[in-house]
Length: 461
Ligand code: ARG
Image (cartoon, rainbow, N blue to C red; front, side, top):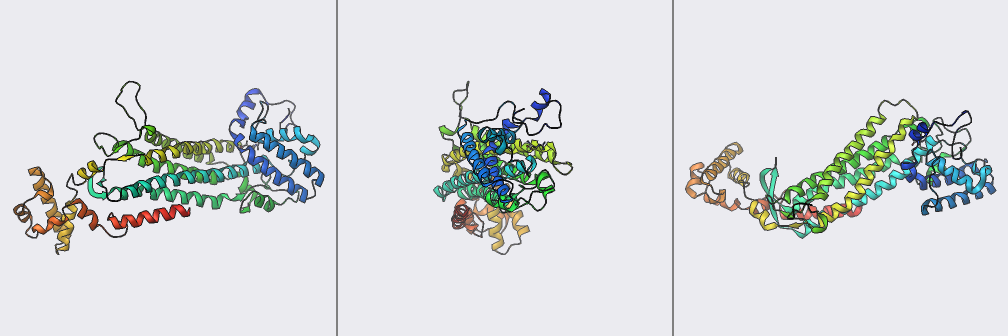
């Protein structure tokens, strides 16, 4: 069987269903460019160890170059008989340089150390692309925040009216988890930058090969300290899958708000035509599908993480074929985010905010009650008493069907003699917002400061 990497001790080839079960070329082919690069590094190390003549090295590197070009152009691909990407590439190399030279490459390495290395290489690159996509979303949020420096809105807890806040403050609140996710991706790389190459099947190499040289050539920080660990551990993949799922969850929280805000009941935003969809029956519809797919796919990303963890659980050392199941969930999480992130960036950058509507709703639901209580505290009233008094103001206003700012002098005094008409100075949305001027608060100066910080941090990443 051409392209098979084993067979000497077998009298028959695998049954068709065995081969079908075993096969991974339909998903591991994305590792091919990394496999060729790693093979070139391995060839040089074989030469350094005296196991490959200078002439054979040159032939082999030439063959690998031509293979890389054919993989890139799509003229070389896996065939029906290939079990995995590694076998397919050996077949391709032997086609180019013959079995005498091509057959020397596999000395001192195993698919176990190979695949663990290639998966790390692929993932380190993928994670950089995802991080760039997340930073684009952060930029879209920051740009909208900058475009609406003084727009106000109802801040909510429990989805109930809570306290007025700046729209920019709310938008920036979504940038921080995303920035932390990018930091998590950077941090993942610290542990992922360790090369398993040279670990062999599990026990290391007897051929005097130099794992550190391969690691350096493949842009790893170091080679693995323990060959058994290096070939069997996939915590690096689980860590990436977690951060990718966390990104999905963070995007989903934002998506949920876009869905709510675009309903006529909220009426905060209008979605751009380019980032919404229609209905096949209801002509009036404009649906927030980007957000719904984000919310839906976050479930898928969580599933990829939990599926991978379940695959890893209770596997004895060292390599087990279960580990072939490690790649698809992670590949999928990356692919889903690579589709989602540009769409979310487009969606956020083109949101039209109805700031008049948001301003009108900002004081609704007595959101200035806390301001009355805190005003009383500044007059020396204990907060316990102040809280009761502000609550009583809400009761009186609610009974009369008016806002807190509409209470008369007499009504205020009847609630508590400390409630002089001066309290009205805090009974505006703008006054309330401006008063929350401690670090992290919603006052305009603080939010402007925060926007600068978000911009500086995302540009430095
Ligand atoms: N395709 C396998 C994987 O993805 C690598 C091959 C290891 N096979 C083996 N028989 N040791 O993990």
